[in-house]
Length: 322
Image 1 (cartoon, rainbow, N blue to C red):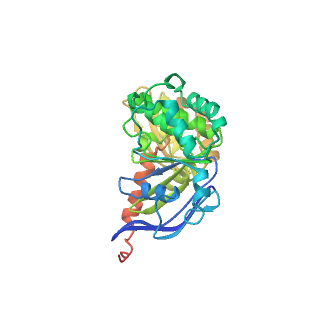
Image 2 (image 1 turned 90 degrees about the vertical axis):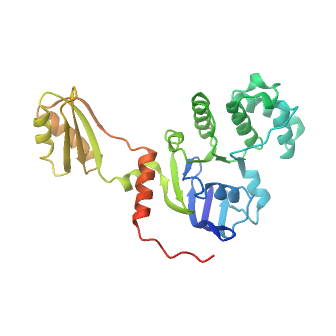
Image 3 (image 1 turned 30 degrees about the vertical axis):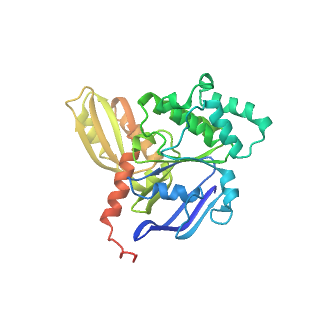
């Protein structure tokens, strides 16, 4: 694992920001760290980047403990905070050159490295442009290039899409996918779930400093939804299709929307992929003509709501003393 967190706890005075957090991120993942404002996302990221000491517990990045191997951790991590500084009278090349020097990149290596990074984030045409004059989206991409100036293995991005227009968000999403293809591991936080829905391979859901769920998206979805909603569009008698479907023991319920054209059925189905395939065969052999047959996909908003509702419904543990 590139990130390993064990019983991580942090307090701001009497306020408990992280409550015995346990979390793992595998290499090559795009890990969506999801939670409302104040859930503990930024605190976790600041500890992983050695900017904040935990009250207790342990965190490791690429095998290096964050409180004992600070310089080794910083070599492995590129951090883009939610708000980052830019400087007057500095162009995009000079901005990256400044941080390359801060990371002790050899002067002879910098020109080609900076050119490659500007090309990667599609800012080569802004090489000599004043940083303060760049758009919000361009500043975000330049800041992302800055996080990679020392070629870290882990990128930690805190609310990177905040304040971006729709086009800039699409560009950022495609850039993150490209970085993953290059072998980077990316931890990205957001409280806007739709920003992460199409890019994450793994997610962690945090609320009130506690990790409620963590793992690859497919596994979490299966654990939260052991049954599926199969949507079919029927040409002909929808009632006959419904009657055929309920013959199978895995069918829990069938909802018909006959006013639509073609008629639509939603089949609440409990079974694996083989059982879903058997349902399709059963309907086809029963003479049902269909134009659509597919399991409805859950999105991150549904997953988040399901996990947090389970947490709310569970009995609250005794409050930890300050």
